[in-house]
Amino acid sequence: MNRPYNFSAGPAAMPTEVLQQAAIEIMDWQGSGMGVMEMSHRGKEFMSIIAQAEADLRELLAVPEHFRVLFMQGGGLAENAIVPLNLSRGGLADFVVTGSWSQKSFKEASKYCLPHLAASNEADAHTTLPAPGSWQLSANAQYVHLCSNETIHGVEVHELPDLKALGSDAPLVIDFSSHVASRSVDWSRVGLAFGGAQKNLGPAGLTLVVVREDLLGHALSICPSAFDYKTVADNGSMYNTPPTYAIYMAGLTFQWLKRQREGSLSAVAAMEHRNTAKADLLYGFIDQSQLYLNKVAKDCRSRMNIPFFLRDETRNDAFLAGAKARGLLQLKGHKSVGGMRASLYNAMPLAGVQALVAYMREFEQTQA
Image 1: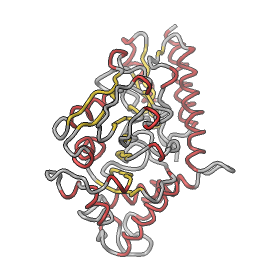
Image 2 (image 1 turned 120 degrees about the vertical axis):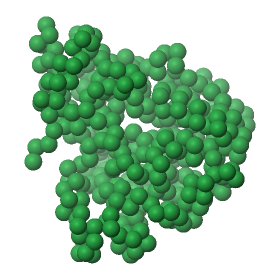
Image 3 (image 1 turned 90 degrees about the horizontal axis):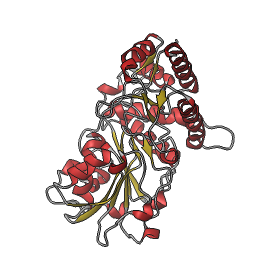
Image 4 (image 1 turned 60 degrees about the vertical axis):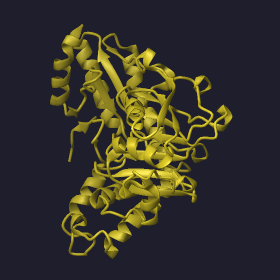
């Protein structure tokens, strides 16, 4: 079956193999007589699903033993409150603002702690990244928050900062919602990572939190029990009914990812290689074009979310209509920035990017 290519930023396209397997199992999971949506989350069937999902994720991301994997709800947006509720101790937290999502994180944290703006690229319209050496880190920060890939503005931190080298003992918190599993994570530099699943891991409804064990047990008294990381960890992500079907779908995606290994490359390294090739193809075409423009500095361009603009924006509607007619979907940019955006998550094949570039070239030629 030839499906359209879906460039949505999230909820995003999922691997065809995953959708096909879910379709087969939707009414009867492995002979149990039940679909996963109908199972008790405490029954042996679902317990095996969540255990396998965690094991596969740990393997894929090489998560160390002293980190806990939590399957939660609320999305990355809710984590903007849940993180300070758990880690801030009501004190000060440093924020590096690099786009819309880190701006939201900074604003939300003010309800629960004292957020300090350590660095910002707002003066550059979120098209660059402030060098870690320029960050104004606080001596007593409880943590440092960084959105390592900004979905809307299309900037990505390609190497996580070493906070100790910058003179800070605070744990680094990263929002890796839109590039999780697209590249490896240096866990020696991370205290906590969180992300909504609906971009690169599965459907909306599941939030992934990977947290170092020593950061558990410090939640503010006002933190709801269901959002207390220690409570969630102590109960194996089962304190409240978890998003069972979303966990199942993410688990299928993890298994699909494991099958993407290439030779000596791990699955995630293989995906990073493919993602780099896809992004290079699209950026390369945009950069030589007379019609299209990407405004992000080349050293911090996202490999997952590529915003671009038509120099003649009166042609936007015609461009989108022509793309849809060719099975190239969800290319309209975020309403806050306009233009176009192509999200090239793991499930997007190289053929999809090739089809997009071919259409963009054709469209440009018709405008000459």
